[in-house]
Image: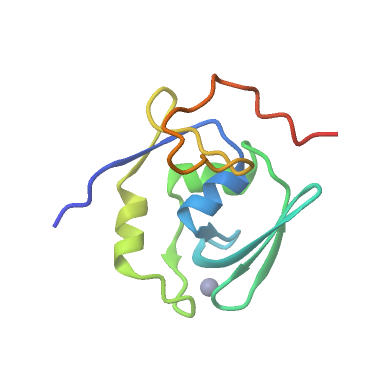
Length: 127
Ligand SMILES: [Zn+2]
């Protein structure tokens, strides 16, 4: 069965992408499954299913951001046991400049409110 294509915006912060995809490409090309994510002041700390902890600066242009978008990895981590469907879904994800939702980590949409507000800049958490 083919996975439906999923579109994600290209330019968005790494935290939002990792929160959505729940996968992490390590420097050595191992694709880990993400167990938990802890936001920090200057980025975030993520824990993989195999117990590794990565501290990451949240940047749309970091190595991990580029690798995530390019789907650049050598193999999935055997210890994380990333399920096939997740790899497939990731493989079917298209990172597009113009299509797809922009992910927001700061404000989840209110359930049942029906209407999203006008496009506010997402900088309100600064300062
Ligand atoms: Zn792992």
